[in-house]
Structure formats: structure tokens, C-alpha cells
Length: 377
Image (cartoon, rainbow, N blue to C red):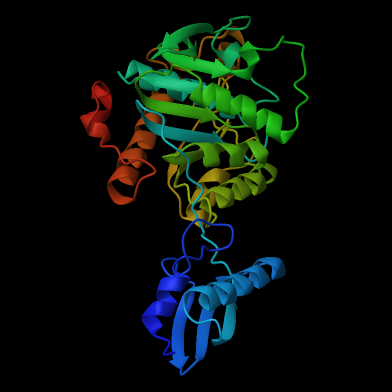
């Protein structure tokens, strides 16, 4: 009997790939079939099969050809094992419908005023006509409720498209969700990373944020599980790093910048803000005392090749305003309010530049947003 290649291929097409539904011809497992009289040579290519799967496939091929082509065929099976190609994915999450830009605000070190800066930038954006939200991702030390005079508040449940969602609490034109809304002020949150990540995902995806021009994420200090969970869960438009000028804080801020710039994260760093840059006594308004060092964060930004968004002085009223739950930027026509306005404009300019010149996370033309009129100028 003459064995034909077509007959062999037709028989092989009835054999499935181990562990999969596709046949070995369509899947590309069969590289070559050669016929020499009653001898059939078959070359296969498999991705790291187990020994059991490999033997099972060989037996199935022998049995199928003997039964359907020629029972006395001499069959040689050569299997080449190739490693599975690892698919390297950028850590990018799924967008939230209605939210145009998501900005992570980070600090390498605690106590540098990151949450204070976040609060004031959010309120300043709201005053400019933007729709703004804050996700307080500082699971173990949430302070945003205090800074917005919301301690003791509890989010309500609302129905959106047939699903129950958390309704963020709003004050000063900013929508806010924080783990602090679900715990007592004196209660310590003692959670491992996976539990904290789950709580964050609920506040992100089970919330009725509505339409937002900006969602600011107040990250905890350092670089760890929470940071990774955030960049895995959301397509972050960019990150901003807050630091004081002293070397101890700058060393940690440098690590924070490096984290966002890692190859598998690649979140654009929109800039660095220097907080507590200097102190000016009321009785000596022309004097500046650089208590924590001079222009350290500015030099860090230059060294790392990222924008410097501005500096904020050490002012008692900023601390008092945060403690009383009324952000300092609400003190109209004051020097500190003007500083926050300028820094906010610088930040938004960097978001505009980022969206025009870099591929999405989610590219948005900020100048086309409804509202935000003050930023256009």
C-alpha cells in the first residue's frame, strides 16, 4: 500500500493538542511530515510538555496512523521542545468609565506633607472648575478625612445600572473615598498586603465616582504592596512626588521616582514638589530660613530629569488649616493660596504635555474638558 502525505495529515488533524482543544495541525505542533515508502517521519514542536503528555501524544499518533492510514507503517516521531515565550506586559490596569486622568501622589518618606499637598491641589482644581476626586490609598494612616473635616462620615450606597455602589462623600467640591470612613479614629488597620489591596479595589471599582476630570490618589509613604496594587489596577496618567529639601527625605523620594520609572511600570513622573522649603517669620517678612536645606527637591528633579513643579514654604496656617479640616488654599488672595494655584497649573500643564506626547494609559485633551477654564490660560 502506498502511503500519502495527505492521508497522514488528515489523520493527524483528528488529534488534539494535550490539554487543549485544537488539533495538532492547526495549532502548528506538526512541523514536517516525510514519507519514504512505508516509513513516516513526523517532526513535532511542543512547548515544555510533561513526560506523561509527550508519551500520550506519541502513542495517540502511532495508533491513529496505524488505524486510519496503514497498519504496518513504520513511524518515527521527533519531538523538539521549545520554551514557552513569556509575554512581558506593562503593568497597566483597566480604566474607570468617566474618569479622564488619574494622578498618583507619592512620597518616599512619611511626614513630608503629601496628604496636605494632595488636599490643596484637589480643592484648587475644583475652584478652577474641574471635577475632582481623591482616593485616600494610605490604608494604614488615612488623613484625608481629617483634612476635609469629614471624620465620622460614612459613604451611602447608591444603585448604578442595577448594581450597588459606594457614593463618595463630597466637600469643597471634591469627591472622596478613604478607608478612614470605615474605621474608628483610634482603630489601627492591621492588614496584610492582599487584604489591603482588596479594600482598595473595592473603593476604586465599587464606587460611583461619576464623571471626573482628575482622580488624585494619595499613596502611602514608601514603595510597597499598595503602590504596586494601584499601578496594576489602574491606568495611571502620571505620578507626582512630594519631598522636603533634607537629604533623608530626598533619598527616599529618589526611590519613589525610580519605582515609577521601572521598565515594567513606566508611569510618567509629572514632577516633584518641594514642601517646607523655607520659613519666613511674620516679623521678618523679607527673611527666608532654610530649616531643612535649600532647593534639595529642585536639584533632585533636575538630576532625575523630571519637572520641578514648585516649592511651598513652611507656614503655620497650612498646618492649622489641615487640622481644622479646611485646606489652606481656601484662604483667598493669600501668598500660600497663590503658591498652590501656580503649582496646580504647573501640574496640569505637565498632564497636557504628557497626554499629547506619550501613548495612553489614557490620553486626554485636557483643554477640551468641560470646565477647567482657568487652566486654559
